[in-house]
Amino acid sequence: MRAVTDHNPNVLLVDAVRRLERYGLRADISISLRSGGGLLITPGNIESDQLTAEEVVFIARDGGIKGRGQPARDWAVHQAIYVAHADVQAVVHVQSTYATALACLERPLPAFHHRVAVAGGDSVPCVPYQMPGSPGLSKAVADGLARRHACLIAHDGLVATGTSLVHAISIAIEIEFLCRSYLAALAVGEPPRLERAEIAQVLEQLRTYSRARWA
Image 1 (cartoon, one colour):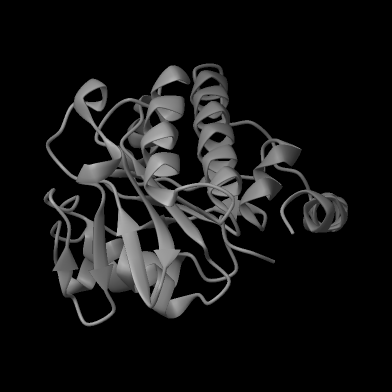
Image 2: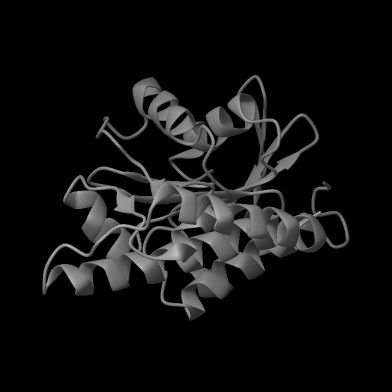
């Protein structure tokens, strides 16, 4: 396992915002990378076409902030995830259309499709609503990501994590697509679930694949 080090991480974060927008995950994006005893995070309140690498902010473990920009308002959520989960190297938080719709229904994403396993289990949990910026929200999200690479936040959106920035982005994109498919299926009726044993087989395949791709 390794963090992203091949290029300027500030530039990678800016490029990641624009990549997510190209996939339609436009609303209120914040992306971070574990870095030097803290994290690098995209700034808040800047349009993507005006975003530059110089606006990316460093936040130390003690909360000290360095950088020209103002950090995304949910930076404490990112920090809590890194503290709680040593394997996480990148975090993506988006209020994308379909993940947010499911989150506003306070519903998890169940194992209606085998690709739900990309989040690390047989569901993407939905953590209860907490006031944005509160310690309770940070703890709820960090807890919700136990044994998972993604979770929904009720009445908010989607958080995805990964062992690299590419990994976290890929999970965010896939979970948004699956939320869209699940909501479409609900228009007809509740889709049946795959059995835990079936999801376990997919998880084993993904572990073998991930060791090669994300390591």
